[in-house]
Image (cartoon, rainbow, N blue to C red; front, side, top):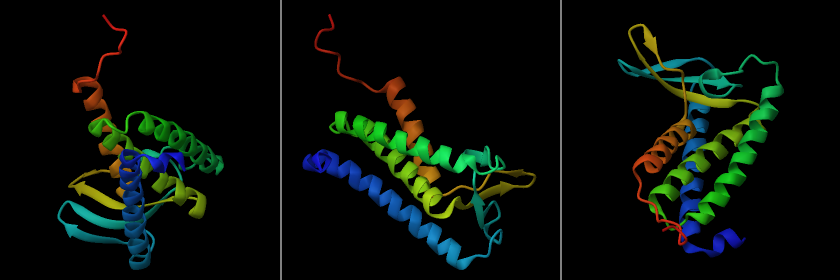
Length: 166
């Protein structure tokens, strides 16, 4: 509960929670609306399609035989613990905290799927002529945007110098 005592921390955990809710509401809607692998064209380059991913990003290790579910759950749990600690430490650095909250919400959104369903529900499918990007979801989008912002912040962000620096 100590994490909720700090108003800045509550804000970032609230953002992570909002991402989890948005992720699961969209996954629920797609799962209730579409049959497995059914695609609904929305734009010439974008469709909604219901797929189940037992692997990681881009279906990495999807055909590994089942052990990957527990591996990705463990990785997600460890990442969550690390991100929450980092978030606590940097809760008053808005760019960094925003990025961490995006990654946290996305990671937990997918971990919840893995625990409850044994797979992650993906449904956003971009394609053009012969090119197709693997289907993904709101959680994946939050993780990707958060990771890009973390890289951007590490390269171009102005961070306070340690007090002992000369």
